[in-house]
Picture (cartoon, rainbow, N blue to C red):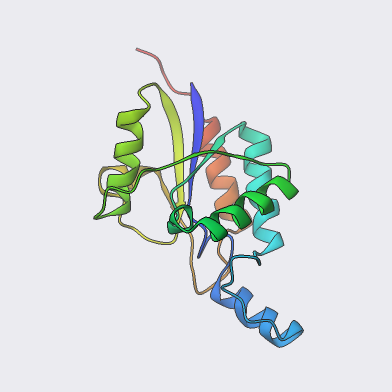
Length: 155
């Protein structure tokens, strides 16, 4: 059974508190695609390392080529790679995830890392981050690891 992380970027790999810190410490205006929070990237790497999960990008960054390339470059720098991305079908983000599953039938264990809650039928798989606080945290990363590594009874 493959393990998947449906990955949002804004609010997961960066946050408002990160942007304020970068502006104060380095005078850098964040929410640019070339700057992500290294702490959040390390936590994502820990999830991938401990679960062997594949990354499927569900973020709007997948539709903006320079942003998407920067994301791929960041993940590569941290020893991760993008396996794919959800199609854009419109409406709630959960619709895009459903469309991905429809195009990729199989058995999956998955989490959705996102700061939004528009996941439709996938709400039970959402690990919700906080855009205004810190994005991905140790506690949330541990929750992802637990969900992805959970033993499932086979009937």
